[in-house]
Image 1 (tube, one colour):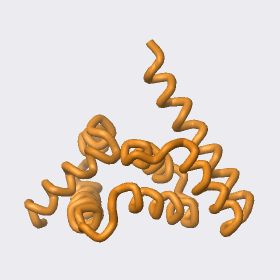
Image 2 (image 1 turned 120 degrees about the horizontal axis):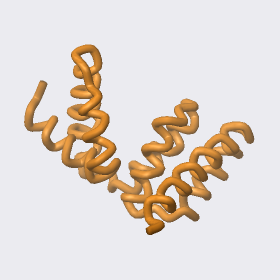
Image 3 (image 1 turned 90 degrees about the vertical axis):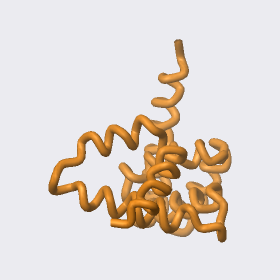
Image 4 (image 1 turned 60 degrees about the vertical axis):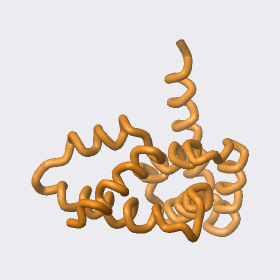
Length: 129
């Protein structure tokens, strides 16, 4: 493992996904899953997300579309949170998922809207005193 890339990736991952979410994932890592978490953190977040060719907003838009296409609702939820952290508005996320519906089919679009509504409700609950 490249420690420098891992640390860079860990910082970006915490900024995008949220420190609490990342720390929870890492705390739940065991000997079996540790290599996967190291790979994700080092390669995805350290090697790719730190590249200068695309800004984080653009990377978030891409990830929303790709995760929708891959039918990965759990990962989609995390990247909806990340997209909001990277400056996308709910309206922009809505537009991404409308486009998903046209290009991937209505069931995919409906699924994305359902996941987004859950994420938005969860975030609103956390903001309510």
